Length: 460
Image 1: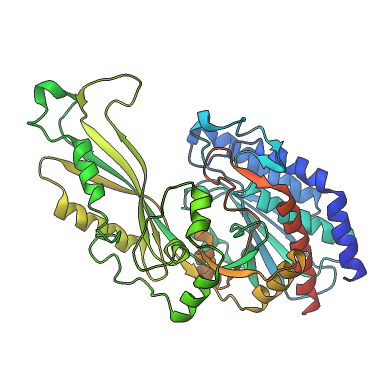
Image 2: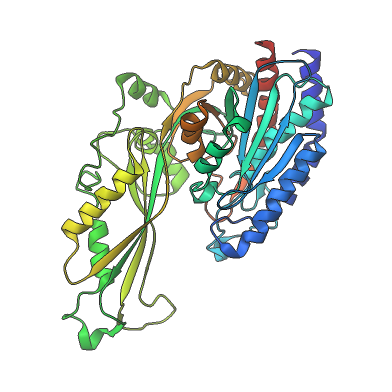
């Protein structure tokens, strides 16, 4: 280890408490992007990020308006002239914390238990963002910033980044870089870091089914009026066949197949059925037949119900036939699938299967493309080296089941790839109650990023 790198890592270690306090301060801001009542908190979080960058002497810091929540931008020049520029991506918005009764502590008052920091956004992805900024601070401590940096922190990732593509097109020159570092992925386990080379896309809908003009007494009208909740349930049940494949017409027409080489790589991942059973707590796994569990998650498309609402849902009983029923339905898409085409496939299914006794409405709430990147690019190889030296084990390559719309949009609009990693763990309860961040892994992630930036500079 060079003396400069050693000093930078030592700096990061001596400032762990400061970094943790900064993260806790950011987590206390309930920047929930999907809830209009939290718009002021979104603005507060953007301002917090901007001020944090200014304190780091980042130049040209701007809170930039979009059609929705703002983007925070900034840039830093390398200590020595270089053409190499890395765009660091993060998002400061978070998911809603509900159901609140399942949290063991206030979701926006972070607490430490058993070496983990609990709170909404600790892992996804305020912690990952602060890991990047802590690494940059360590580089600055010796005056050895090896590459030019740009920063992009958005506030709409958790709602599908609906305004980001238009924003990037309007500000293309500002964000041009050699590649983006995106830590919005995660690790397979505490001892197994990884590089993600593929992400699934997203198509998200709200389906409403309407029947009678108002709620009806189920004793008076039950048996003569089709219940919209029953009809919706049957429609949803028909969206998978006996092999758990999605039944929308044409759904698999453009699905990119898994190559034999990829299948062999998936088979080597330490993510067998026992791994998923332990992570989820289910009795047995479910999914499209003929594929390994990590293939179903990372390389095959899916359809899931994310929420249901109909009739009386309070305590006690109320015998009604509801006037309407609603479902939130999302599809995770793989490369070559298109969210617009998937909407037409869903509409075709509903036109064919919905009974005449009801009528339906479908709204598309969010969408984003799937993407694949080069896992053996120069930047990915450099990250591989940094992760391996930090953890003392060879990182894995994997495709991730989640969606990060900006990765595909950067490819299409800005013309460069992203290097995807992260230091969250599968049991971090991301998007669920009691979200948490494993602090030892978080701190090792900072070390890995310090090494990564140093090694980028050495390869100039």
